[in-house]
Length: 385
Image (cartoon, rainbow, N blue to C red):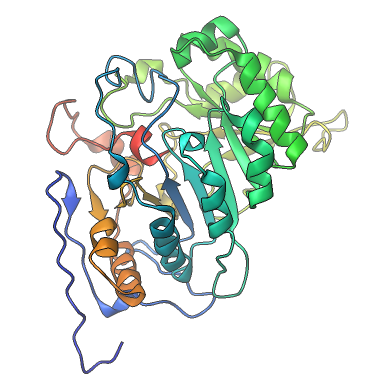
């Protein structure tokens, strides 16, 4: 952008509560190859999570409880959702600013019609260095058996499947729509057969609800090539009735696993990873490549904000800088208001460069917030996990 002309100010009109004004500056223009945009804490922009729908076919108590998301709940109209073309347009600018990985989320992303077309379009994007993106998707697995091959054919590389236990009674109780474990396992098998891997399985652990499933889950997935990850029950949003008493710290999860398995800590693959990795050890005390590994995500007891490099785009085009944010930036208004690619990149870059979010690090010092309070945190079902 020339120094002789000030940045164009794009008006943002959004009557929905929670939208923040978009800061614009020439700082948000594309970086040279290898130089990612960084926030105020020096964290680069590397990972973009895109919610493609606010709907889900499960009613998990920790995410979309039935008493809130009932038959009268008003979901977003189709016209409010970003089209595939708009998603790709935004994603292209994120990639130019340093994003290397895109994860499609929901709600349940496989409910979005013709999702394979979006995956194929995103698959054409390249980083400034000319590299293809790491493209993955998080799903509850209910529709995975019938869609796995089409997803792989479209260019999806990996999937993460949410599964909170093998005990069918408990699992049906937690998803609250009486969906059987067996169908999710069939979806995981189909994903493996299609070459969507390595597959990760995420288990949200709630003390007193499904924590007795920790060892059965480890036994089931050990040696399958699937990475099982245990996630602390999080205080996301305001509808899940979260309380600390239901959190089982990851340290206790590992302690339970070590009553049966020998585990060795592993290094993270890359900066910004949320999971702490542990390898199963063989008889000689070395990592057992056949047995594989597990992970724990200590979202409550051990903050990992310090190197968080993730941005989140809601299904209607709101940009959130933290899973625990209460407000987003309305990129949809820019898209539909005729903003150029350069202006969109400038807006995204400016937003990220002013980011200072670190909720998990500050959690202990924050006062409790009533569920009905204005500006409450965004729901996980709205921007994905």
